[in-house]
Each structure stands twice: as C-alpha cells, then as structure tokens.
Image 1 (tube, one colour):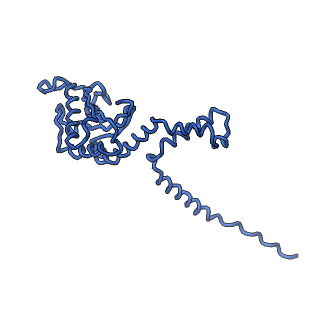
Image 2 (cartoon, rainbow, N blue to C red):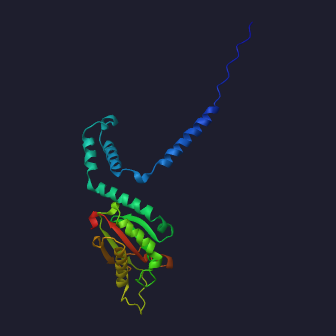
Length: 242
C-alpha cells in the first residue's frame, strides 16, 4: 500500500494580529482628526429630525432617503433662524476659547453659555480689590486688550452685549464710598465698559447692570464660593435677550 498523503498544514494566522493593529491605529488617527466643534449644527438638526420622523411613522429606511416630504422638511430646518443664531454663537465661542486661553489657564476668566447667550466671566478678585470698583489695570490690561479684540472681531460684529456686575453677600464697609453692594456692582460693570471703550469697542453696543448679591453662582458659606460670586459677566446676547 502507498503512503498516505500528508495533510496540508493550517495556514498561519499571525497576519491577523498585524491587521488588527493597523485597523486600530487607523481608527485612532481618524478620531484625532475629528473636531466636534466644527460639526454643522444645521446638518445635524436635519439628520436628527429625519430620524425622529422615521421612528414615529411607518416609513421604510429606503424611502426616507428619497426626495419628498422629509427633503422639504430638511430645507425648512435649514432656514430656521434659531439654528443660524446657534451656529453664529458657536463660532463666537470657538473664537473666545482660542483667544482667551491664557486667561482661562490662569483662572482669570471662565467661558460658559446659557439661554441668554455666551458668557465671559471676569473673576472679580483678579480685576478689583475687595470692596473697590477701581480696576487693577496693571494686572488686567492684557485681558482687557484681548476682550476689545474679541468684541471687534467679525464673529460678533453684529451682536449686542451686556456687562453685569455681581458681589457676594458681605455688606460694604461702613467707610466705603458705596452705600450698598448695588452701587458697587453697577460701578464695576461701568468701569469695565469705560476701559473697553478706551481700547476701541463700540460703546453703543453695550448695556450695563448691577445685581449686587441677588444672583449668586454658589452659596456664600465659604470664602472660596464668595470669591466666585464676586464677578463681572460680559454676555454676548442672543437676539431674544436684546
């Protein structure tokens, strides 16, 4: 009898490890390229609305891609002014985050947003002595120059702004020139505007307000929370809050 034919060896699977590593590296590469701040909010809203419509109606996925009512709906969504405003404020926030990176890093300002618009908060103790409305200009000049550059930039050229002064709950000193925290908070807001106007901002685009201690961000139970409540907020207003 002849010898049995030798069974072929199983092919090596070593290549799978290299292939898997390559796919993982490509995934990491494209994740690094992805910048969520550059997402087109109008396109995102259109996609979201289309998905919601598909969930509530018995329309197949294939049909939802064809031109028709959903296509018209997308066009309507694209034209909504609220989305354009949101996109505009998004560009303004991106500009602010980039421009004020040194001030945020040194804990001089914070950048947030709410229903009123984009908020640039000047942490008061970096700009004013406690109980005073006089700006520490040597300490704050660079930040104020960056603020004036921001307010003159194309991203916020057609906006309006409000400067709000706030204090903690500590009453003013009996020897203070201010009768109460109301006058102190309002004067701080006005003085910030005066300096910005000297650096070239459009003064008639601003309004000012003083809120004393009526709108705290934190409780006034500790020295640290009181320091955060002593602040000046500069708000790039949404059109609904002009």
